[in-house]
Amino acid sequence: MRGRGSIASTGCSFVAKMLLSLLLTLLAVSSVNGARILGLFPLNGKSHFVMFEVVMKGLADRGHRVDVLSPFPLNKPHPNYTDLSIADDVPRMTNNMNYELVKAISGSSAGLFIHMTGTEICRLLELPLLQDLINNPPKDPPYDLVVTELFYSNCYFAFGRHLGVPVVAITPSPMIPYANEPLGNPLNTAYVSDIEDDSIKNLTFWGRLKNTIITWYRIFQSRYHIEVQNDYVKKYFGEDMPEVRQLERELSLLLVNSHHSLNGVRPFTPAVVEVGGLHVKKKKKSDLLPSNVKKWLDENDQGFVYCSFGSMVKIESFPNETVLQIYSAFSKLSPIRVLMKVAVPESLPPGLPKNVLTMSWLPQEEILMHKNIRAFITHGGLMGVQEAVTYGVPLIGVPLFRDQPINIKNCADKGTAVFLDYLNLTEENILGAVNKVLKNSSFKTNMMDLSARFLDRETPALDTAVFWIEYILRHGGDALRSPAVKLTWWQLALVDVLAVIVASIVLALYLIKIIVSMILSRLASTKKPVLTTPKKSN
Image 1 (cartoon, one colour):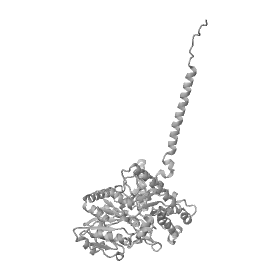
Image 2 (tube, rainbow, N blue to C red):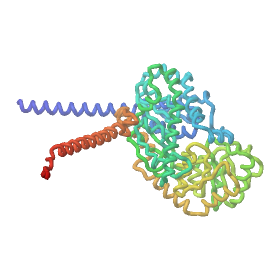
Image 3 (tube, rainbow, N blue to C red):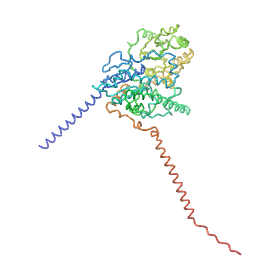
Image 4 (cartoon, one colour):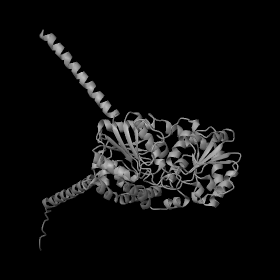
């Protein structure tokens, strides 16, 4: 009887443990799938938000409740996605950047750019909506995670410490140099390039020297100009809030808009994950293409060239003489047609060639996946470059500022693009570049090869992003954090270790010298004197 009772007791105990384990598992899954996430994306750059929106929708589709603060509320409601719109509080940059502003930003120091995209964005913390999030955050349920942008407005990292939750950052560009140190990510300027006019591969001695100086100078600039954000953090979150540099070290995960096939091979800690191209839909939506444009593109068997400078820059604001040079070059491409994205076509000077069609808005992905497209004339924005790579469309790059030159240079190094200087757009240069791409099949071949490598992944980029965000929700903010974030630069460089090793070697050599000297001295003192027979005197 005791034996049977013992067996029954053991069986009940086993069942109880199984039920408890199952209950804990269900609770864990429920807590992840039902997380409440705050997305903070106050920068008024549509090209940046394209990426953020896809990530936040992806989290919403997984059952998470996401509240997204941005200047870009959704046009159509999305389940589990709530807009916290600041559209009326910030100036819109869509189709609002003219030629003079392009030149100013292109030729400006880092200070002006960081002020525009960092300091001014931190000022928005005074908005009532943000003040309400700081002073009266929701408690039913509270937030479990903050997702925000890593660019130059790092004051928003304070929300993580303030709410007591992990912070996941997304950068719409490749890895920004200053972000390596706070994440404990290695930076080797021998082959990780930050220079805009040189290759990411086969750097010569002078190239490595230049790259090292420029990279560290830009890190210093970024650090110097971001420093002022400490004032905003203290003002709006309290004097006990750590400085921005410490808040950067508390990041749990950084999603980077890059891929080794396009941006080069480099080391990453587990807390830095490449998700380049996650915004690309890869699904044809022909209904997005206006019927007149579709007919115009379909009916010409000679194909077409697509020209767009993105969602911000207005081509029509370029000097008239430059636009007329573009006209002349495009007219000589006939019978090949040219489709141009122009925000305000009416602002163009007269004389538009007959083989050119302008539209104020175009569904870019649907254009790039069209069967008749031959080449893409672009300013080199990373999102557009990734879309062109996805669909295997060679590029004529006319980069304007920031990361655009290096984006085009990376493609040119791979034989998939031709680089043009926007300050020297002449008929001869434009026509020569376009014809070079159209008449040399290697550009298309190389781009198709790059596309194959860019798309060859274990899981789609969006799934990768969502997985690692949920990983942080499951395992906590420290799960991926490198121990390097707790070390100083001289500890990471092993300066102290090397100093001890060198000192030990010097000390050992010195002791050896003393010992040898003592031995030689002892030998000299114990050496028997040589006896000589004295001479007899006469």
